[in-house]
Image (cartoon, rainbow, N blue to C red; front, top):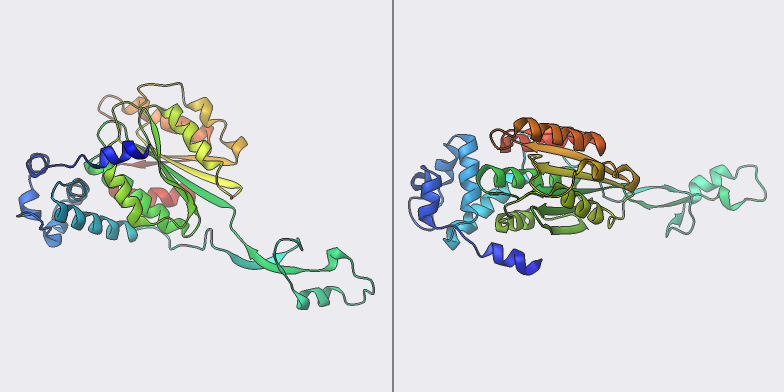
Length: 306
């Protein structure tokens, strides 16, 4: 898979193609290597994010680097997301297991032993570091063309998730007719690293949701936390593979909750896409939220993880 991702990353976008996609390119980047942030902020918000996302794949190395840096800055401060609440961070608390690498808490133990002449092991109270019980996995639908607004949505969703979960375990997986792990399950994922990996991703043509869920649940099993939150970013339109809903129904037995962040499906597929997305969230014991624009990503992440 690493060779596949390297091959995809080498496929950059030339200036003429960028100009064909975005009429405002010359305003935002009047010449090679230049990115005017003020001009970019003056565009329609959706178009500005779509242009910035495409610039992260520009053949122009300096322009590409500046666009990725700006995309990382935007992802690091998503609007509408609660500050990290220590999810995944170790917190000092009382433990009952004396073999968990903890220290004996004499104060609490002595208070318990008042009037007891022969203390039992259960009377001893230990204090040590406990971790939160949740891990997170973002699954990105990379079928068709993952560019423009779709890429911006993926970047802002990843940023919002990193911001919310803090140092908790987090993995990111992308899929089309194949499934690839962009970020293995690990604590405290770097937003900058995720922006680089998503910007390098090109994806493919068909959509196998069943394959995506199997791969996601396999990755979730790696997590040390007992509870796993999977966020599936998709339009819900599958073009190959088995029915994904029965697979979603196995989530609870794995300690997984499957949430669906619904992208806008292709024209004519709206009813099918919405029905599938809702069915997947219901079968997976999770929540459903709609992402009509990239700006919806932070609020959607907050709503499903509330």
